Structures are given as C-alpha cells and as structure tokens.
Length: 366
Image (tube, rainbow, N blue to C red):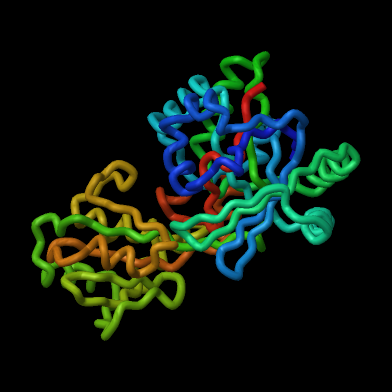
C-alpha cells in the first residue's frame, strides 16, 4: 500500500463538552463548526496511531492517506456492492465540504514489524488527545507522529508488506473518492482517508435481521414451510447460534434454533467458494416472504451485532407478525476468500468492531 501523512482536522477537545452530541451532529453542521473555530486544522502532515478502548478490549490501528489508485487497481478489496444513490451522496458531501469526516476502515494481515512500530510509540508516551463517550463505554485515543524518519519507515513497510487490504467499513466513501479522482485526475482527490487495523485488532459480529410481517402467512404455516429446508428446535430462552449454518429465530415471543438441512444446501455448497447463512436466508426464507431484493425492501430492518439479542427482542416487541433472525458471524477468512475472488457478500453481512466515529479526526482534500 502506498500511504502518506496528511494534515488532520479535529475538534478542539478543550471546548468539546459533549463528544456524543458533536459526533452525531457534525454531518449537519460541519461548515458552521469549522467557521466557529471548534474544529482545528493541523499545521504539519502527520500519521496518527488510533486506539479505541472498549471496556478492557483495545483496538489499535494507523490513520493515513492512501493512494486512491490502490483501490482502482483492486489492491484494496471490497466485499460489498455499492449502491449508486449512496455513492452519489458521498461524492456530493466531498464536493460540498472538501473534507471527509471519518476514515475508511481497512483490515489487513498482521505485519509484526508494523505492530512493533505502533507499540513502541504507544508504550513510551501518552496520547496527544483522547475523548470518552457516554453512550458507550469507549475511550478514543490518538498519538500524532510528525517525525519524518518514522514516516519513511512506516511507509516502506506498508509498501513492501501490505500488498492487499480489505474494506471493513466505508465502501461508499472510497467509491465516491475514486469517482471524483477519475473525473478530475489532476485535482486533489488522489488520497483516500484510511484507518488500517490488522485482522487481530478487529472483531466481526453478525448483522441480524428483523422482518416486519409474514407476508399474509400464519405463524404455523410459516414454520411448516421452514421445516422443508431447516431443522427446527424450540428453545426455552433467547440464544445465539452456536456455529455456522445455524440461525436462531424469534416469533411471537418464542425462540427457535434453526439448522439448514444438508440435502437442501449440498449442491449450493459445492458451487460456492463460501456459503453464507445470509445468502441462504435470502434464497430460501426471504423469497417465501415476498422479499425480492434484500438491498431495498423496507420490510427488513438490519440490527448490528453490537446490539446483541436485546436489539432483536426490542424491535420485534409484541407484534405477532414480526420475525427476528440472529445469525452466526462471518469469519475473516471467509471475507478474505470472497474478496480475493472479486465476489461480494449479501448486503449487511458483517458488523465490524471497532466502529469509527464521525468528526474525531478528519482529512481535507488538498
């Protein structure tokens, strides 16, 4: 990867009384906040080591600029299809603000020498700034690195050792940047704003689903149809799936453990590099509920894995027609295999932790 130091923008943390409010509102008020002086612009290009403390768990990565041609040459792999409307939205925001408010989250195979360089900095000095959030028990810490020798070493390591990276979050943001670069190659859209976290620094959680109605079917009929291609076992309490090809379901305050019948999926498994439960759910279950396009059907609510079973229970509520599905998380090796084959996952198949927040560190296009 061809990475580069950049001049960062970030809030004046001495004036930041509510980080939760600031990060949630900055999309609406970026220009006003910039004009007010609440957002500072760094004078010198730098790399930033970024650590998110989530309880006792630490996630550490590096924030950089990355040559957008790495994406155009397919060295930065995507695993999700982009939607034209959302890509256009991101493109419009870049043109309006000339700034991107959050790094694109990229994951890569761990390089011990890179990990050591990050560890050497974070173990020897305090972060330059940090911020705590009330809505989640997280602390976000940043180390600014302006030393040019360090820049040369880290850039050389990424160029030599990190030949491929994978988009964990930010498919539409990087696609919007690439579209502007292709339209205006002589302008300043040649650097994507990126945060690199090695595989061992991230966790993939499932993206669960809640469906708003049974498409006119009774619960008994729906369960009878499910039994044609799934083994169904009632549960005495809420539970997550124990392994791949197992799903748990909430319907009318009752929980069930579902497992795909092997005879139903064996042919599919033989023809697919990775057979995902989200794909099987779309193919066998959602199609019977009249859902033709899971990307656009408004009857589907996607529930991030960080909300746990409580997120499903809350959204299903007391509505007898709503159904909740809890999936087993995609493995990082599955994501890599699909991405390397230039294939994509069904929409909302992965929820990556850590989640980066808008406005804590930003990059202008210059």
